[in-house]
Image 1 (cartoon, rainbow, N blue to C red):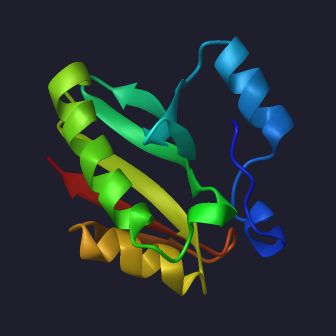
Image 2: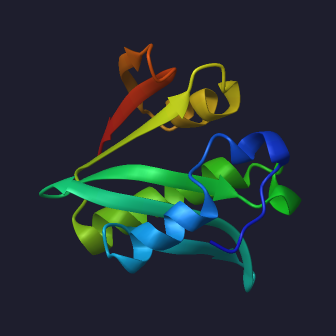
Image 3: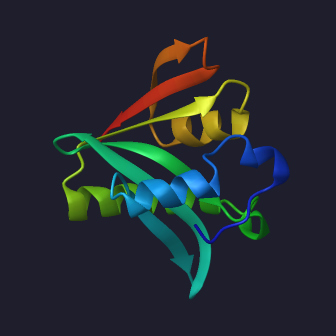
Length: 128
């Protein structure tokens, strides 16, 4: 992962060490998100069932936040997953209270399916 996020966002995504270990073990797919030959973000997904993926990490570099790129890039990433990996469903979670993530996912059509109080997370799903 080549992106740098704001300090409070670091608690909302997996650590760089964990991301690297998961990718090295080939337990997930990692994608740099580029625009105009610059890395603006990173996404990591894991297939949990045939053509169904979990969005494990999604981050936009702090230099590019607040420009609408989060939604634009995730929308394009969804098309990429469908066309190149046959993705029919994408699920994800966000930490309760993270209204930026909540609004991003809901704005793209994700539906809340469960609140996990013990983990302080909200599970969401999108059918593609």
